Image (cartoon, rainbow, N blue to C red; front, top):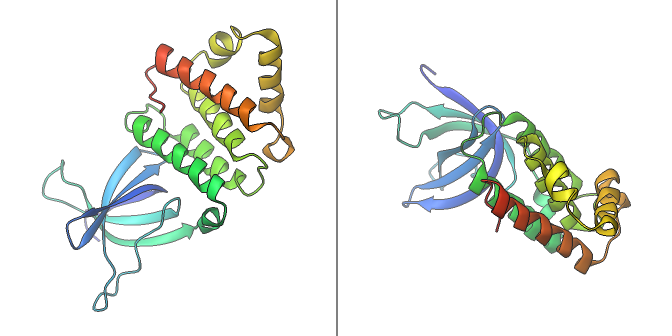
Length: 205
């Protein structure tokens, strides 16, 4: 297809764009956050159903007449599905927090690749994690670190020693080996989120 281009990444949001299309935002390892228009599948359409949240997809995009226009998807292939997340409500809610974080912070990254790698490994980790929010915490930490922010030297180093040691244990442990009280992981998350919102340009809700 002349002048077409490819987009490969993870689906982070879907919303209607008129009656015929869905506006889908995808995080790609080369370009970061991008948007594309997927046609709704219909009885008279040969289009596959549009991808679900957290699907990994390879897309071929149609060229548009304006650089500012959202491109249309000519065809796509679903590489991997995370449909099993829907069977675990807490994991799905936590994965949705990850999606929002990338939607807020994924558009202007100098090097999206390490963040794409972290996103993929985090979504895979939900199958093993005993406490889903541990996955979220590790992702926040790795994202800040890979952006070159002093998350270890500033945030972690300034915490009370006992609290910091608990956090280091979580960071060093595989997700399936971390059993932690809900109140404690929430405390860790709140501390890191406050630091990122106050001391960095990252936006965390």
